[in-house]
Image (cartoon, rainbow, N blue to C red; front, side, top):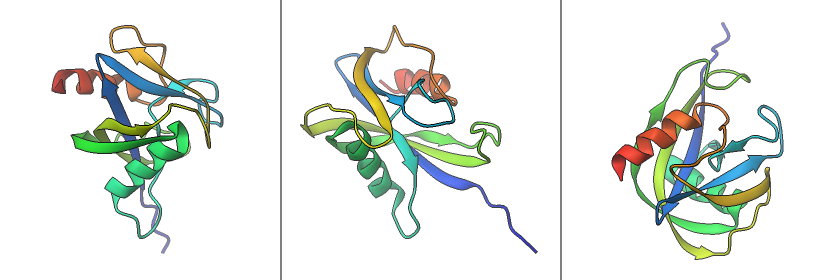
Length: 132
């Protein structure tokens, strides 16, 4: 019997002075759209460590996790298959913002003036705003 388990993802909601960092996706799905920096958790990796790693890989920033925003598990949230996304509110603690890895661009956006976002990231940002 084959088990089809959801994959675990993480996203970093890096917020400062009413702005949030978004990356422009370099790969499908949603290639070219803006999203929170994040990705898949590696086997044997803590989700918190994966969040910090993904933020560094896609934004070149060092971040510190402040708190859990939520867990997002709608089976239709990712067209590649069922994912369970764990999202953390993070603070920038070092580095200079520069897109790399899976991100073709990275930038700060006002929480009140966001572009159309990939996946369910509009809902996630709405939840982040309620936490602040």
